[in-house]
Image (tube, rainbow, N blue to C red; front, side):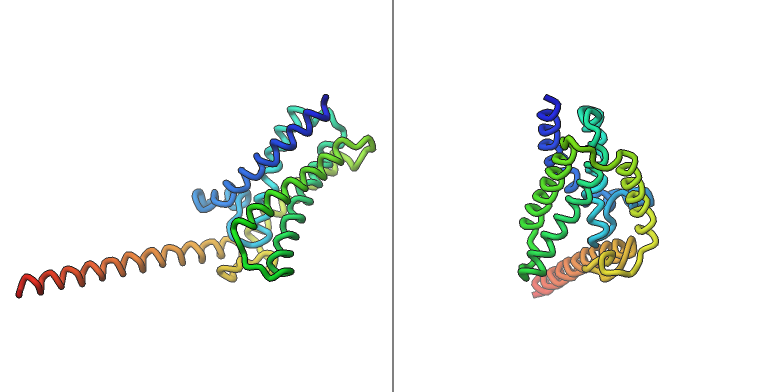
Length: 213
C-alpha cells in the first residue's frame, strides 16, 4: 500500500517539478533581489539552470516526505541523489543533441528533454527508496542538499570564470550577465520606439507638404 502511494506521489511529482521549473525560469526577472538571485536562475548558464531542478525538487520532496516518505528509511538520501541524477541526465541529453548530433537549439526539444530528465531522476530515486537494502544515510542526504544550496548562494555572487558558469548570450557571468541581457532588451525596445517616432515624424511631414499643396 505504502509503495503504491509513493509511486503515485512520484508520478505527480514529475508534473509538479516540471511546472515549477518552468515558472522558476522567469522569477528573478520579475523580482530581482539578492534573495531571489540565490534561489532562481540569473542567467542562461548551465550552473544557473541547475537551480530549476534543485529548489522545485526540494519543495516537492519535503511535502512528499510529510505525506508518505517518512515511512521509507531510504527516502531522504534517495531523493537527494535523484536531484543530481535528474540534473545530470537532462544536461547530458542537451549536450548529446546539440553538440553530439549538431542539432540547433530547439525549445520544443529542450522542454521534452527536461521532462524526460525529471522523470528518469525520479524513477532512480523511487527505485532506491523502495529498495529493501539500506542505501546511504539520511543525514548525508540532508548535508548534500545544504552544501549544494550554499554553493548556489556563494557562486551566484562570486562566480568562477569557467564555461559552466558563463551565459552564452552575453558571454558574461552571474548577475552581470542578467544585467547585460536585460539592458540589451531594453535597448532594443528603446530603438523600436525611436524608429516608430521617426516614422510618425515623417508621416507628419508628408501631411504638412500635402496641405501646402
